Length: 73
Image 1: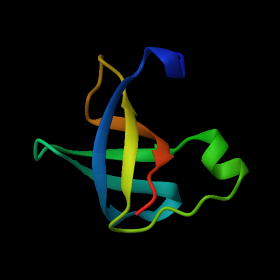
Image 2: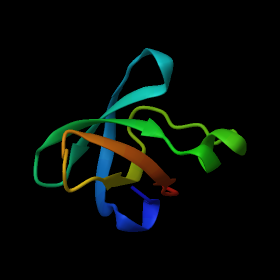
Image 3: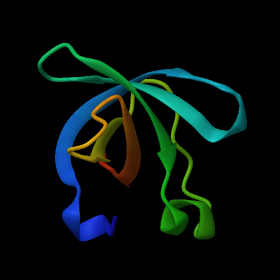
Image 4: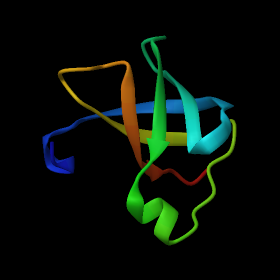
C-alpha cells in the first residue's frame, strides 16, 4: 500500500521501543505502534517522547502505523 492511501492521524509519542518502534497515543485516546518512514530515517530526524506526529494508518490494520511527519513545538 502506498503512502498516499494511508489515513493520516495526529497523535503524540508516549513511549519508545527498541528497533525504531514507537507507541503513539491518538487524540481519541487510542494507542498504536508505529515505525519511522524512510524520509525521516534518511534525514536523521529524531523523534522523542512527547513529540506531536502525523501517523499514516492502513485501513486494513489500524493497530500499526508509519510516522510521516514530526511537528514543531
